[in-house]
Image (cartoon, rainbow, N blue to C red; front, side, top):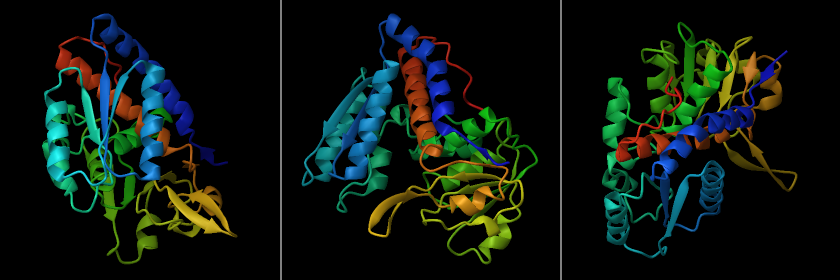
Length: 299
């Protein structure tokens, strides 16, 4: 019988583990604080920011919500980032994508203080990840790594296949999987839009991470019997006039073959947000110099 990996439950347990560290920091006079900057009135971004803020409030992490006009200049955005970089009361800082086309998001990420880049996207933080000594692991790959560990899935010696090579998920996920240490040591294949015979590659996977952003790209015929399937996709599709949320994996056929699978929703998404809380708490401990006795979540 296929195990359905409950990301909501694992994320809740992660928040419980973090609560002591947040309380320690607050009692010592430094409440961890996350600042978010939004420039585009994107409904999905609005929803995601609201969810992050709810998570922070529940755990006792402070939030700063900065909204810029859609027609604000890139320089206005950079000035806002600079101010938050210099603000000692802000521990974590992220600029929610998308940004207007006139703004180069790479420049936005590079403007962040790497010590406050709790998304883990700054080139310095990516470089540290690739070198094997990360400051902050990107939240979605780290959340997947934690979810696998919490489920008792051993990556060492496994053949992992990652579909997608984005800077947010695919590339850092591959680095975590083949890196040394707990949660890594897998033989890792990365597939993308130019991969020939994708199904032949995915059927070799003991652990399959689908992060292509293509609705139901993977079905049961592409999965090895007993494989662990992690579905990162969040896609809105129209079916019979109704909007439906689906992943990159066709769930019903996949669950007939997989040994374990993450659902959409309720799988990877909650873990992404949980690891953002962890990175923010870690940043607060480092920047305040207060030993918060962080839980050992950096598998």
